[in-house]
Length: 139
Image (cartoon, rainbow, N blue to C red):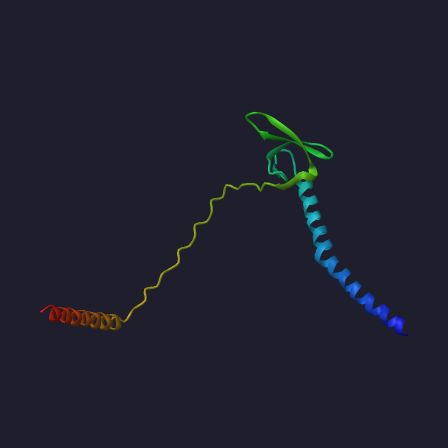
């Protein structure tokens, strides 16, 4: 009986670790790979892509395991890249102008200027007192 208790106490944490490992690492990676495969299957001739190395290019031909991309139209430079090295498909730019931001209405706050006036008059009185003291000291 003592050996069986030790075995279950060992198996339970191991099973918990395996479940955490699956849900935190394996499952998200499979989901990411599925989205990448879907993106690769949606690439057609004329699409602009970005490679894992950071190169931009337009797909010229689609082969079984790779793409022929045109990197610079003016020079006609072409490159053959593996499908797995495509990082992302550049999103299509739409001709829709961005919506202007709405301006927030600023509410004017009515202030009670009596407090400001009181502080202002007390400061003026203190300045006069200091001036009187300095005048009497000079004399």
